Amino acid sequence: MSRKAFQSLLERYLKGNCTQEEQETVCRWYDLLDSDVDLNLSELEFTELEDRLWDKINQETQSNDDKKKGRSTVIKPSGKFYLSAAAAVALFIVGSIWIYTRLKCNPVEPTFISKKEHLVTRIDNPNDEPLEISLPDSSHVKLFKGAELSYATRFDKREVSLTGNALFNVQANSSNPFEVFHQGMITRVLGTCFKIQSDKDSGKDEVIVYTGKVQVIRSAKNNLVRRIIETPKTLNLTMNQRAVLEEQKDSFSETLVEKPIPVETKRTLLEEVVFKEIRLADLANKLADVYHIDIKVAPEASKITFRGDLSNMELFDQLDLVCNVTETNYHILGKTIEIQ
Image (cartoon, rainbow, N blue to C red; front, side, top):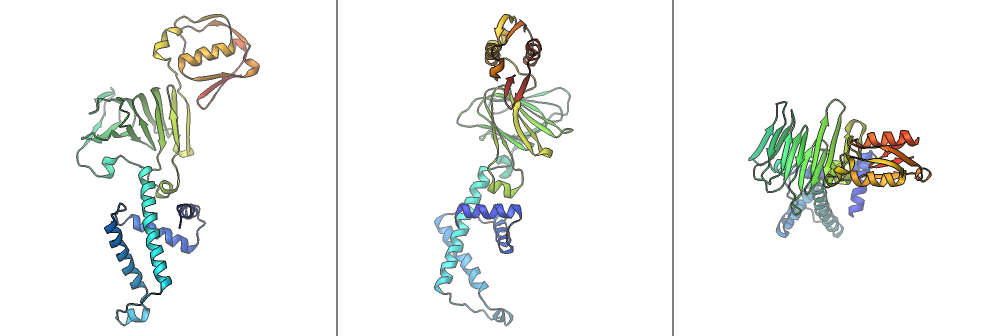
């Protein structure tokens, strides 16, 4: 059976379209996953595994009468039987390696938890004031009230587990990405500043990026079938963008932060911004440059001009004023703002 055929079988199982025989096949695979069989086998171990499977096949070919009489009879298999046995062994080996690889690519918890390491550092913050934490790699975390952070005391692999809200300022290391396992997401970065916040009342979890680049992956949690057959959805975020996960709505989307901040080197450009007359298309380009956000103007509105003072205002306040003066509207479409 090819990988494509095997994946098709699992998809049919997930949708409830399997035959009884196919359902039993999938169940046997899950039983194998829960066994002590190491899927990373050497050539010698493959041979031993083949012998073990052959013994089981040989035992199952004994007649019911022989079992009842307590006799142990070895039946000489035919050539077709040998081929069937060899095919079963090959399917088991290839399928096991494929499943192992898929599970490896779709983790649901940090390595130090899955390997059950004993030396784990756990820090919680029961106080109202944020708790400043310095990690072994010189990254910094601001842990807010009620949050808990866990990581391997020997911080070789930069992985942490988070419950609650925290602000991260990650030390850059291109050869060793930093990963945060939190709620139903995994946030992977090389070096940046971002915030993770969870709202239990609304059931909404967010990753907010202030600087750098962040990759946010939706975790399959403990859904084994999804981990095997699905490729997890991934969002790539930059400054002033955020990922929003709403488990109850089964929604995982990307959009802009509620209060975009200007690029540090261009912050002074907002201190005195008075326009006597500027086309909306040109104004959009200036604001896009300051906030590192994609701001577009519909063709029919690009030549409309704006006059006014945008000094010391936040982006969405500026857009409200611009649209009010020019009798236009703006809409947020994912990570883009469009003025119409």
